[in-house]
Every structure is written in C-alpha cells, then in structure tokens.
Image 1 (cartoon, rainbow, N blue to C red):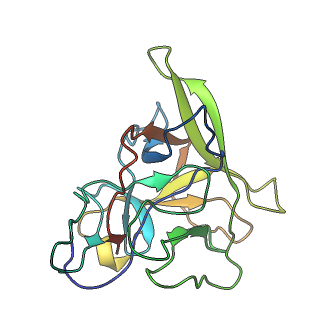
Image 2: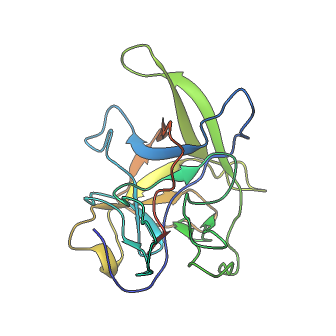
Length: 202
C-alpha cells in the first residue's frame, strides 16, 4: 500500500544494542501467538501506527532526479534504537502513546504527544516450532513494570480501516481497549542486507 502524498512513516523497535558480533541491524516484525489465527502475520506501518492485515506499509518517496527509492514493500525497523529503517533526513522514531498505541513520528519532526513513552521495548530469545532460536520483541511500560505485554486490538484508524484488522498496542496504565488478542510478542525477522525499508513511512 503506497501513497504518493507527502507524509510520514512507520516501523517498530528493538531494544538490544548492535555489536560487532551481531552485524545485522535491520528487522521486520511478525505477530507471535501460536494459539491465535494472528500468528505470523506481518506488522506494517501506516498512518502513524503499526497494524496487522495490511498488504504492505504506507510509504512515500520524493520524485528527485537520480534518486533511487527503496522497494518499500516491508516495514523495517532498526535494532538497538527507537527508529524505523528509513532514508529521510532525521529518521523516524517509534514511541508508545499514553493509550498504549505503538506509534512513530512524522518525517522531519521529532515531536511526540504529551505522556508518550520512549523506550520500554525488550527482547528475549525463545525456540520456534522447529526448535530454532528466534528473537521476540515485547513491551514493559517505563516506570510501571506491572503494565507489560503487547496486544492486537480490532479498533483501527479510519485511515486503514478498509484493510487492517488489528492495531498493535502495549499495555500501559492508560490502556483501555477491549476485545484484543494477547500477543506473546513480535517475532523479529533479520534482514541480512540491512537495507532501509523506505524513504519514509506515512
């Protein structure tokens, strides 16, 4: 899903730091809950939120001579920082709103809503169904460790309501969504080439 209007981007976050022994720094994300029909669904950025059910992310690339735009068919996030894997100057930061909605900043702006959380994403390693190690991204509200975990909720933004089925939320003191599906986390799928996911997400 690509929009040609100027806008912003989307992507999510990992908290582990990149090291010389771990050269892969870019990842895509998938829902993880083996007992749910949402298991393995791609997480995509659109309209300043992260969603399940979309065919791809919402992106923008300016028409500039000799500018090569990324494929922009996946939502790619950086390991080790609160940022999306984008080319746009200044990048785009991921944060969690007071309501729990996992969101990201508009391109060319570092502004986040009052009460939003920066940081709080955690990672751990577990085995998949084939006994292979996989990295899982989860959430713990900074300063409120009892409010933790990620959920997928069916109330989605009007911007994407024709295709998205669920929006990703972190449990925060202000979270009040209903009919949500508990996620054990988000599977981080390594992107060995470390290429940017988009010029910017919108």
